Image 1 (spheres, rainbow, N blue to C red):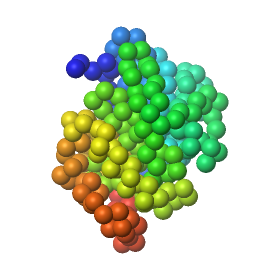
Image 2 (image 1 turned 45 degrees about the vertical axis):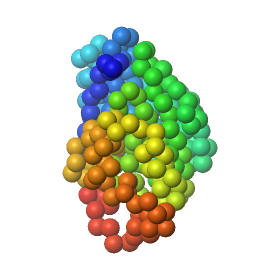
Image 3 (image 1 turned 180 degrees about the horizontal axis):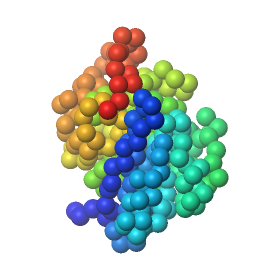
Length: 225
């Protein structure tokens, strides 16, 4: 099935933080969405202008600052609707001018593009993965190499275990995964690759999963690439 939108990866950096945002431009309407805009909007603005597109939606996977810090600027420039899970917005009291909260399994339509909202707690209380056609935008829930930390306020390694196993059951093996950070692997690997290479996809016992996720000797926590 042909994709309904063109996808562009936007890599930004602030000191040691390296983030990945994703711009989708619906082919029929030229309406666009961006996932987790961070640090710098110049690349995003350039792509929108280059392709004659208008920004209709900002999709936030969670409310941490390194995934949301360009929201206010984009609101001023384009007046997009900003989507975040209701649980996330309420728990962390996240606010912006054009916020619209979503529930699990709710759908967002941008032109001909349908985006499924999957609430996947673990890294935060109400993290969301957005599933749009052949792509999954996973924020800090799932990386190509691992999964997000679960030790900040509202995080839970138990929730992360169940969220990952839910994604395994829902997302087809050929869907490409686009996370908020990279630790060396390029974004866009298929789920089938994660089955083989991502250790968290291979741990079936919840107690082992929680113990390993919460270990204190992880030296690569912020080794972003």
